[in-house]
Image 1 (spheres, rainbow, N blue to C red):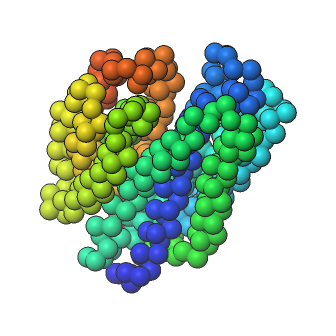
Image 2: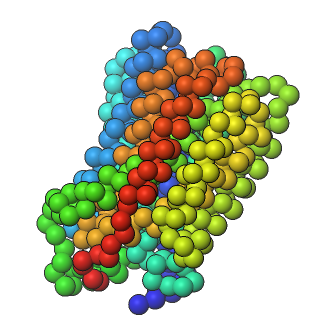
Length: 412
């Protein structure tokens, strides 16, 4: 049954807003964890920096857990219910992070670590449920089936806005006003938008696929068991396929952009604007090409071409990021349709597990290779970073060739 386009568009708009805000929060907090928390809660030192980075990293580690647990409820109780509580948890935890008193010192960072864990848990549940609900709605109609690209745009938009916000704050690290409340306001904006989005979630419809499963008695009591027993291979290969884009965006492009924003004589703002425009177009084309070819073929072309554009960053010119934006985004636009590879009985659990686990890789790489990253983005990029990026890309490319598409055994 084809749903009214206006109804589907409303769901897409709410979901895209949420994914954008969560990406914004993650990028902004990454910079704050390095430049603000060690000064506000502890005496600036290598130890305080490590503690702050762990507080930041823990959210990425809890995202896969949230994807599984909240994905379970999405597959058992409904996509809409899981989405509301996931966003609500994230909104509350982010809001509380902005209010932790500096006078608490190390204990304040411990509280932030706990709140970051909750934020990651909620974010993980939301991402899987959002992609699943939107896929199950847009795929029903010819006018809406290409619109998964809008959700895929969320992380890119979050990166762009966070770079602008954080760059505006650069040089204010020692400013008392910024250390007292400036960083809190940057985080609180995201919390407010998440709270608004959780309210909007109550107005959305439930997935027709889930309602059909429920009516026919196909809802499983333990989706994660069903997923791992019947589609463990798809989970592994899908994870390896998705991780290339996350790593390109978070591990390479994001810190590289800050380097050019800080470098005099480079119009990095124009590069950022062009990069975003190219990404939007490329993500859109990736979604359209999915219906002419398949999401796997589009992703293979994207990953292969990205492997050729990554080494260009060694030229130390902001313009080298433009082809990287284009090639990597093409496959990302198609990968929203990977959701359909999972059986609807455990679709949200599988989607949440794959997309959230892929977030862990670039965050761990950034923390583990932090000394290398510092050296890389002050001067010329290290060959080490490019080699690591290329290794991830090749793993994704190899996995895409191994994926075997098969029709779901559960018809809804």
